[in-house]
Image (tube, rainbow, N blue to C red; front, side, top):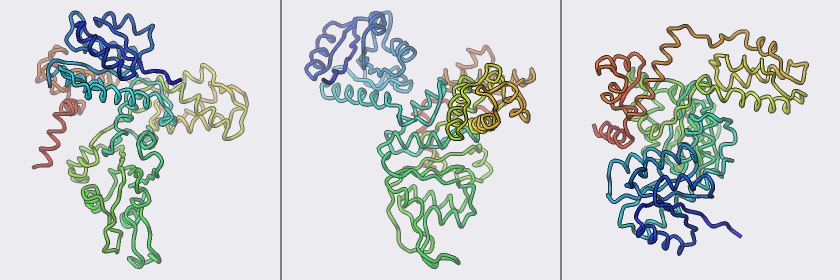
Length: 457
């Protein structure tokens, strides 16, 4: 027998509790009720709950505060907030912070049931983690990015994945594809910096027979091969400018024209791109088109370097150990504590890819079932250990602190300077020193308006 979804309804108005309970139970849901946020938090640890539906304005603990407790302690549990106002700032802020949605009073029955159903369906999809099996992590930062990726996967918007080489950009792209409605169609990847311009153009768009020397037959390009699925443009920052113009036209018109052909071909492809380059600098130097950037960067997912997610190093090391022993038929079972300590100290300029190579090397060379500290030390002998100078450590702390302030204040420099107890002039100098742009941390609505304004100009 299918288990009924269980909703925790929180409101300090008994009349609203009774009305919504009747509506939800009539639609086949089980309902728990709480007359305050505090009572809801007492119920959650001991009750199975699939969704929290809470009023925003309550005495003592409001709906936003309750949401923050739920987000911290039950991160996969969806929350819907009810408000008496149509577009109050708190509700907008709530959706930006991760609240699934909000309903306005008087609550329309159809909208209530549709929103509840959508939230439960979304939560069920997120509980199924098969789509991201290739990404091994327990880092809160990575888990947050995966949650963002899953939400993005539900639409067809273009995604730009940024981050250093070896940080897992293609794996993230594959995960987005697997979580999308296109999962049963092709995922095709190409490195835009690995081919000369003419060959890259032919690979992407195809060519007609006789269009150039050596074109002895018609060739289907990757856009056509990925029709219905996803095309991953890796190292998009290395794409030659003439091809940037053609790619922009494809994104605008959703048609391609093979090299040497006069016929347009309709395409249905989701574009995910990636780069390790600083695209802002590339646009300033006119190496990358600004209009193309805004087409590709509808949503940006920035992957952190491995050194910024140290809690993942032991998990990844053991994963790569198991993978290498199976692949090479070796009888290596574990990693010594000393070896793990060295791995955790390493700088990892090559990020996850480099850690995988190191683990394959030590597995191949190990004469013992346990990876020794000495073996890891030899494998890391050409790397610097993370023992930064005082100035480097202070600069790193400053940058992290400033980024945290920008995130908390949503790019409000005045507010951030006040928290840091610095005047605005000094604070702007600190941001400039660490190449931090306050505008990047503004709420998404403001960012979208800015993007639209730039396009219009």
